[in-house]
Structure formats: C-alpha cells, structure tokens
Image (cartoon, rainbow, N blue to C red; front, side, top):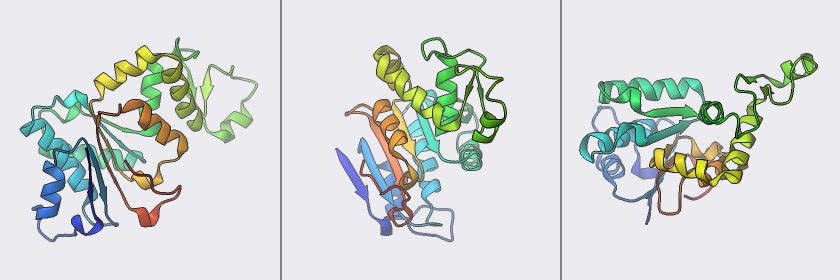
Length: 212
C-alpha cells in the first residue's frame, strides 16, 4: 500500500497546530508514504510529528525508528524537535545522515566489511596528501561509506536482515537529493512490505525524484 500526499497537502501555517492535510500525513496507516512539498512548508514538522505519533500512539519502539537526512545540522534540528515531543525517548531514536548511519554500521561490522576496526573517514584532499600513510582498510572517503555498506549488505544477507529488523520504520527527509547508491541503500534497508515515509520537493531534485 502506497499513499501520496500532494504538494498542497503540506502547507505553511502561522500556528503551531497541524492542518488537516498535515494531520492526515502524520496519522496515515500507509506503509509506504510519499509526501511532496516545497521549502518552508512544514515537511520536517510533519516528519517529526509522525515519528512522535508512531511512538506515543502506536506503541512503536523508539529504537525501531530510523530517520535519515542529509546534513548534520538537519539531523540536529530533527533531534531537538523530537526532544520536545518525546523527552524521555528521543535519545533512542536513530537519527542519522546517510554517512553517519553507514559509519555506525561499518564500525559495528568492521571485520565483515574488510575494514580495520579503527578506520577513519577522510576527505579527498586528505587522501591525496596522506595516501602513503593509510592502508586501504584504514581510511575511507565519504562516498566509500555508502559503497562499503552496500557491499556489506549484499555479501552478508544475515547482516542486512539484522538491520531490517532493527529499523522497522524508516523516514527519509529531502528525498529529492538521494543519489543512486543512497537509493540502493534504502531499498536494501526497507523490505517490500516495510514501513517507509519519504518527504521531498520534486522541484528541487538534483538526481531526479524517485517514487517510493
């Protein structure tokens, strides 16, 4: 089951209350929910309110929720909003950028990923400057975090299944900016009957907006 909420469905409001369309998105029973809306229209509010609704009203365990966004600043903003909505449980919610999520997964499975357990993340500039100082399994670039995680899941179905069971409810903010490897990662994390809510603005798509 997939439900689309059209651009007009998430509208900018002066009050802190949700309008009827936002409320419908928050309380939707659909397992695959796509919300499209423009900048400043309350997308992040809807996403965080939906997470809070799942935990407080639907008895979803906070540590079974994964929320992905693109920048550390956005992740921190999401964390602060959820702290206000779920003060006793927000720390259990998995809030990540794609890179921080992959870093965490690879740290937990370094040996299976073929990595030194103390591997570091370095920029491309640092890689050029210090290429003689690091072995391939000791330093990863940001893109490597995604590709190594994809490889880990593809070569170890048991590990993939473990994270699918852990992240039973997945939300992705700014979905229009997802690239091909990030899209593949979402597909590996969320089974065909899994729960996923994606929010984005197709008018600002970098890679081409993808359906749920």
